[in-house]
Length: 569
Image 1 (cartoon, rainbow, N blue to C red):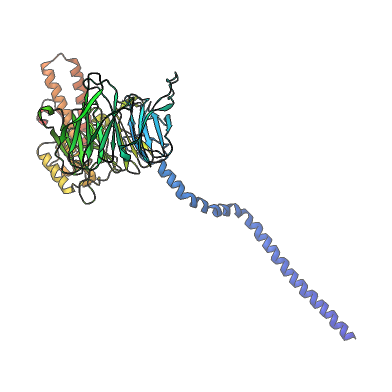
Image 2 (cartoon, rainbow, N blue to C red):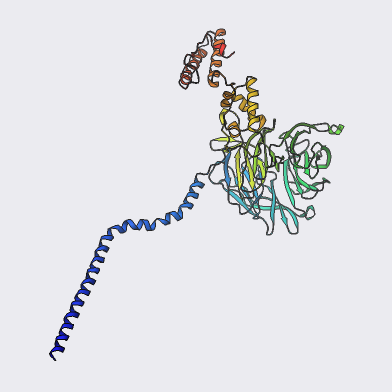
């Protein structure tokens, strides 16, 4: 019995010892865990940003894209964009005073924007909802800015609507509410209307009312009286299908571009009371080798400019005695400066001549170009003027307000639901700028070697680097030599040993000083010229010090007025 008791006591003691050891190790482990957690707490604020760091990485592409949109550069001639259209813009037209711009949109709405300032951040516009089911294809102003003619296409055919004022304008200058004054349905034998052209008839005995020409996709063209909607005449081109038609600015001629290479011209004959007597064909412009895609009249209605698929632009003189069988004459022929990837010439889809008759705007696809109407030289190019194809281009008939100045403005519309306003390009120091795109244009096929040879040839004729650059830009379509050759004109001349001995700006200052001295020899009492000579020679000395410092002139070079004439002889 005693042995059993001893075993039991020993077992209890041994179990207690094991329990103490076990619980002791457990509590030591828990204590170390608590201490480690307590030490880790101050590091939590450092770990939290690390855990949140992936979020900015996730949003980084969006922020970068927004930065790119904010820093997106526009073309220097891009003035403004008229937004708010719900679909592709199919047509546009300026009012006679240039202060209103009407647009036709595929969403079934006509919008008339007030262009009080072309550089404004927002524009007021009048919204005209067309009858249900109508898809507007063209728009034109009738007698004034309050009368608008719209061509619509329905499933049953084409229709014309003329919207006019319902009431007089109030003193606040708000846009009037429009109403339909006249309409015609199922015109052109259910074919769609391609273009509408309007002009105020001022030639001869015309009464000054508006004449509207609607051109169908077939071969027929109808003339309408803008105010009353009366049918004035009907002509047929007999050329498979029409491309467009236009009325001359004075309302005398009607010309059509169609599937064939010839352009037919009709005369609108007026009676003594101003009404239209007849529309008779008087001329045919022959010379293109392929279909004519577009045409436009000069501001004085004496010339027509045509663009053809044969890759050329022709300027025609229609101020001829056609009643004596005198044919219109081709004044100029220009190649279209656009080529595809294979080097084949492209054609222009649309043309528009500025009111001054000096700048021709043209488009192909989404590319917009300005050409000199006298020489055909490219003044400027925008390869992506719209995100889609350009659907219409039109010049404002007068210079309109742009900020604190007035400028000629071109409007373009596109499939991208936008209408853009562009300022006319200018030449000279007052508005000169480097081309917007630094790389060589895709349509330019001149090689670097050809440019080098041309530069050397002009330099041997005695032309300065700036004169060479102007010739290459205006006559050879090279906007910037560096984009083609990788070097500036002066460096190319230095490489061939043809660089001028005196920098060009210093040369012209010396030439100016010599001219002033010759003037003073004849007019010794001209104090203004004496003061001007002091200023010019002071600039010569400063510029000479700079060029000697930059080692463009030898250190011993010195300007002397007595021998200056030998430097510019």
